[in-house]
Length: 334
Ligand code: ATP
Ligand code: LTN
Image 1 (cartoon, rainbow, N blue to C red):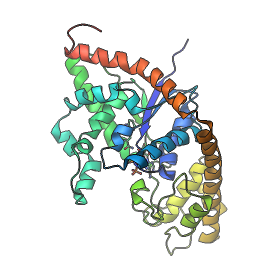
Image 2 (image 1 turned 135 degrees about the horizontal axis):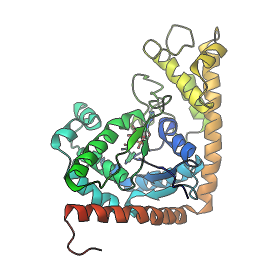
Image 3 (image 1 turned 180 degrees about the vertical axis):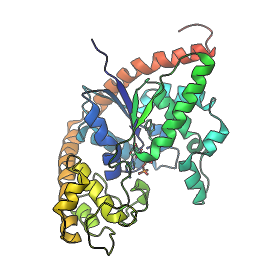
């Protein structure tokens, strides 16, 4: 039997999943699951790197599993689980942390950005989150890590530390590659198209959540910031708002070439174009939400997570043991 190549990725539902998460990451997990063995987890350890309300976190974690499935992840084909159900993540996380230099952590832009915004009382966990992410990946020896553009730096750190540890202890890790789509790897905020669409936008009109009502989503798109040039053209520098909407429309309609979209809307107004984007987004939300409701009602989430964790541990546990042995941390081989 030919072994499938493997991909690993996670989502950190520290808030509600949004259209950026779907276009930049989640839809790719679904697309690859026939060709690859997809390991898709819910990064609940990463969630607590910023303060969380317990009841809200629990709801977001449950929603995230249901949305994974509603978007088409099939637990028969892919391995779907909660990060803390596989304790090897935290264990290897500490080991990788011990092989990561402070200089490397200091260069991570996500942490630097938060610091630069003057956010107070940032946690140690937020600072050391990239080595935990590296462990999440290295435990499964994947070939690729499908992520949005903002995570590229973390996958590069993963490679650097894995190469360092391989040089020191022998070939313990497969060196993974980030897999970043050409279109939709950085969906921008609808209100400020120079910023990434992000769940930290709160109730802001710039972010479309996968559980927004279609009516609310349509309203957000119809009031999206554009420009006064009056043309539908992919030109992120001069028309960032329109270019973002073109990316969204293309991603939701089978990666239609931008030129084709430009041609279809040549000479037409922004209102008509926005309506077409809103139609595509609302069709997606309606489909996802119908499936989400059925999954929540089915009561199957617990079983699916338990089965996923068992499959994940069967891969992660021997890898952790191999690493501990190579480092000389074990006295008796277990
Ligand atoms: P947020 O900024 O909303 O908190 P995040 O990137 O910190 O998002 P996740 O929700 O864990 O955290 O992101 C999951 C995946 O979705 C990652 O691979 C990330 O790169 C991708 N992603 C997140 N936002 C976007 C976006 N606006 N456009 C494209 N991809 C995105
Ligand atoms: N850091 C990512 C979420 C994440 C992840 C991972 C992605 C945690 N572990 C492993 C890919 C592989 C984020 O903030 N979006």
